[in-house]
Image 1 (cartoon, helix red, strand yellow):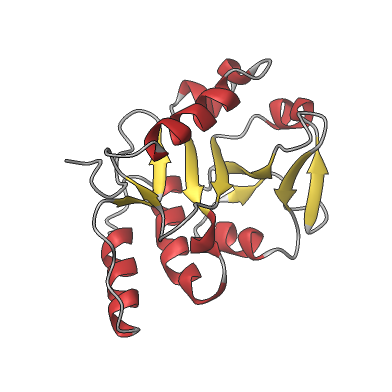
Image 2 (cartoon, one colour):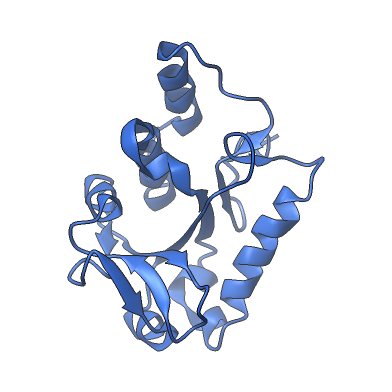
Amino acid sequence: SSPTVYVERSPKKGLGDLITYGNGSGMQELVRLARGMNIAGELEKSAHVEWEWVLKEDPEVVIRTMSSEGALGWENDSSSDIPLLEETIDEILSRPGGQSLTAARDQRIFVAYSDLFYGMESVAGLAYLAKILHPEADLDPEGIFSEYLERLGLELPAGRVFVYGMGDYGYSQGKAG
């Protein structure tokens, strides 16, 4: 089955003007390839929606894309990055009706490192997305990202988090133990 997913780019202007990825966006295509159903798939490429609309659509998965300062992803443990990711998830949960979302009840709200979904890195982004949407899938997004970087002569930096989620979805680097 294809879980319904809401991907939020920015809540900068508040709950009356949230930005999501609609038809023709790279994210829409990645969600489709990962066997998900983007609730904004019929809307314009960079769609502006209200939180009320998200509540009405009641997605099974919520993903907030965010960039990080500095190196790839966010620093694990020893920095202020993880509290920021937790705050971001808490902010979504604290919105009116946020707790009643299917995604909240099933603990399927995530913060994902936005650079994973653009350009050549999107091969890794697709793997992370597929794992988010289908946690039972036998996929190793980190291994894929690592192999991709090795082919470029780069190394996956240790102790970095690329996807952070609620509950037991700890397949962020370092988080799984």
